[in-house]
Length: 243
Image (cartoon, rainbow, N blue to C red):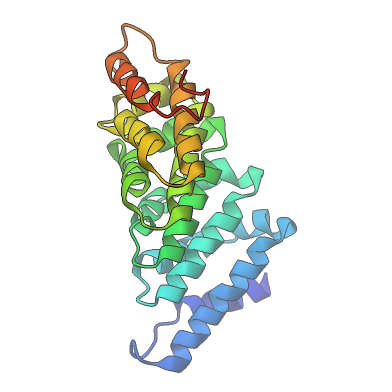
């Protein structure tokens, strides 16, 4: 605990200026240690409940001017999210989901990859998917949709597709309706099935549509959009998901 508090002190210490190399290095090194601590299973629960730690990490992720610091913050969130016991707690923390949305559009491709991985990990739990799908009036769904269509980094698109697949698979009735009614989401999944050059992106997108198709029925408002998406996606003949 004393070690973590010492690291938090370095992480929140304000540099004299953006160009203060010593202070910047100390901050980056401190959060890098947290990254390594968060890799160990036995530390994940302790860290996520340590007073102030998530708040500091979220603050760095949102506002730190150094790419490397934001990357480390995204890794910490991702590593902590891997613990099953942390998933529901993290989704219900103030600003954490907003932070992940923000990080999905970071200039650093590494940060985008880690943030999208955190989201697909958090979406592995049934209790989270409705919260995530309705957050900010579909803000997570929209961010994942944009990453799926536009991110030049394969890993980020794969993670976005897997996040949407996990949400579709671990769904509640609210999750299904939120996903089905989100503008252009079904069409975007179908588009990725047909056009993405990553086989993993195509596969996760197809499986997301498959799971949604099991729960979207007439006369639901989104049923016509699902049929249109399936009609588009079935042109990809290398999967049995759509058929």
